[in-house]
Structure formats: C-alpha cells, structure tokens
Amino acid sequence: MLSLLGISVTAGAPENLAVNLTMRKCILTYINENLASPLLGPQTIMHHFRVSRSHLYRAFEPDGGVAKVIRDKRLDSAYRMLIKQRGQAVSLKEIAYRYGFHDSMQFTKAFKVRFGLSPKDASKFGAPLLTAEPYSFSYTRHLSEQATKAGIAANQR
Image (cartoon, rainbow, N blue to C red; front, side, top):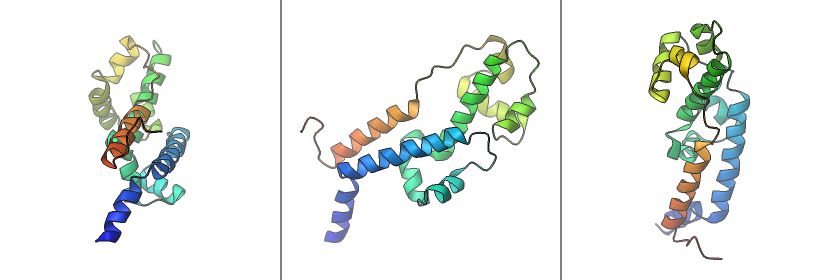
C-alpha cells in the first residue's frame, strides 16, 4: 500500500510534470509535421515516442485525447487552406483526403462541428483562424491542477 502511495506522489512531482510537458511539446511538433500523413494516429505516436497508450492519453486528457488533438489540427489546417484559396474552385474531397479524412461527408460533418459552418461557407465567408494554440493553455491548467492535487503551492519558491 505504501508503494502505491509513493508511486502516486512521485507521478505528481514537479520534475515529472516538466518531463511530461517537454514530451508533449515534442509530440505536438511531430503531429504538426505529419498532419498530411494518413498513418498519423495514436498508434504511430506511441511507436515513434515509445510511450504507452495510457501515458499518451493522460498527456492529452485535458484536450479530449490525442486523437481529438490530431483531428482538430487537421481541421484547422483545412480551414486555413480554404481561406487561402477563397474564390478558387476547391475540391472538398481532395482537402478531406489531404488532411486524413476518408471521405468528404466525414470531413464536412467534423468541420461543421468544429467551426459551426460548412467547408463551402468557410471558403466563401470565413475569417482567418486565431493563431493561439489552445492545447498549451489547457495543459498549463492541467499542470496547475495536478500540482494542487499533489499539495504543491503555486507561489512557493
């Protein structure tokens, strides 16, 4: 029982949180660099970084999981592409495939959920996306919550 307590306390230690943050940044960079790869997914990331599924999902839990992060980043990139090509003939099927969606209907549905408008409407009327990285903000919140749970005061030095 004491060893389990030790493991749970160690997992919340500040140095482990820093390691997780560093790994998370590396994974986000890897995701950004491989968005167009149809093979990009949790399994590929687990293999590339040699991390367990539970560790990977725990690192991205505040964002709804690593698969959601990948999907959102792909949708954000597709949105930017639609805005950039505004006024030009754009094949939704081509954009969907380019960003890892198997068909344009799946892409359109996910796009509407994320942005509240269709890809066609985005290409006609959409405004540029904000460049703020939402995943870093929620992870900071997560780290703060974990530090609080571990009894580490934010203002201690």
